[in-house]
Length: 259
Image 1: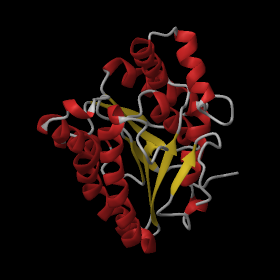
Image 2: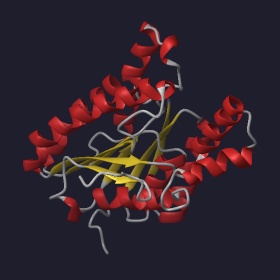
Image 3: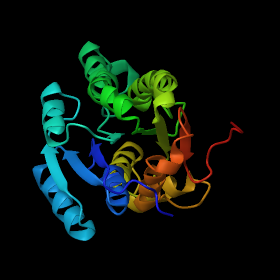
């Protein structure tokens, strides 16, 4: 299927590796010019070089924390009128409820809510004027936190979800769509990190920690990053203009609910 987005321009927050990089790969393959963002200069430079070489698109990079206004400035200098925006980034570290404090909560709110919202406030008016925009946010498939260690991360992401849902209602009439991709466990560096945490917390081996991850998914395997990237690409497509305000589960069939 031709997704009808060749020549469009995308700013992809948190896209130098993992699921964000997979998203960049999938739309670059469709001919979309991309701005890659990440905290590691090596990761960003590698992604830019590989995407431009593999797909013949314009690719540029911005290094830095995408929740900060000065990084927003740099992203918009690289692409002043993006047609596609990926909201993705590093969430707060796992923290027990008893150790939450004002500073940790404020940082989490900036990372997951005020930073992304501030960037969208700068790009959505242009999308509305041009009558094309695709905004996709990456979040977790878990509505309930598995334990207090992850409650801060899930709580702030749910806050962003509420704001994005309201935005979707306002802008869909202008062919600007806003959706979320809610992922379960995909085989990326994040799951390696979580396996190391579980090893220390439970005193188990690496193989046992990874087996626990697989056992938690009904499909009996972790997701592949390219599966996530291709779902993102479809949400960015010309054909997806009637799909907005949705939170779409990519979880290997693990969600119990009907709706």
